Image (cartoon, rainbow, N blue to C red):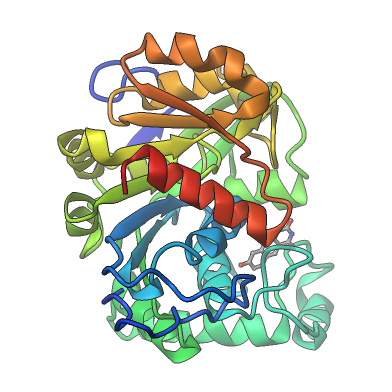
Length: 354
Ligand code: FO1
């Protein structure tokens, strides 16, 4: 099986080792957002977001205050996908879809709201204590996906079916229909599948390397390249650059497409004040020998982004990022309220002149 390893090879990637709303009509707002203002009357631009899970979902909720839902496409990481009890689970696809459908568990940021775990309890009698929490309603998604995949449908098709039935108006695309399986290797231990490292192992331990198994031969899923080349703004959400966005941008054709529209591509720093806003991005950067700062992140993306948005707290990095040949902009990137997520989305779009 082909493997992608971090740090990314130098060269191509360098360091990383809605139809518009009709005038006067309110933007569809299934995610239960804050603004009650009428949207602007000019047609919304097409906006494409490259996304992992929870952090990206927050940003997208903010974005829906600024752009008509039907004009938004989300390209989602599938390197975290895993099999549990014979079911194909796509955590990031589900996090984004549930968020857009307004049914996500807001406290966790993943899974469905109002869940019960009776089936998991019963499964525990056969398989032992579960470590990956699959709710009863969430299981319905995985059962449906698995059955459709088994009957020959592609992950793109199944994702379109699931999102349509959940009432999602944005386009949600898996990055690939081919299997890419992220593994994390801690020092002195064998490489483990991402969910085992992240959930079972609580993301602890010193990172030695990250492998994206299958990345060399995987191709972008239907619609992915067109969503990049046809968008007015392409935004890398503030997701983990290695395990969330890494699998997407390491797809060769995706990287080439991003380069071809580089001035329209912006990334938001997931590192603020020397730490990740959420999750193990900082530990991964350190372990893989990158500077843990917005500059370190910008270097990872420098071949294919035109603009980098960092937190105001880190504005002293603006100049060094500009020296990489990237426009750099400071904004408040901490999305602890929906209004702040909307403001961040506005700032990112503004930085791209959209
Ligand atoms: N994250 C956890 O920390 N613990 C869980 O038990 C867990 C279960 C789970 C079930 C379905 C799903 O769609 C996501 C789930 N996640 C869980 C989130 C997931 O592990 C990660 O957030 C992503 O893979 C990283 O983006």
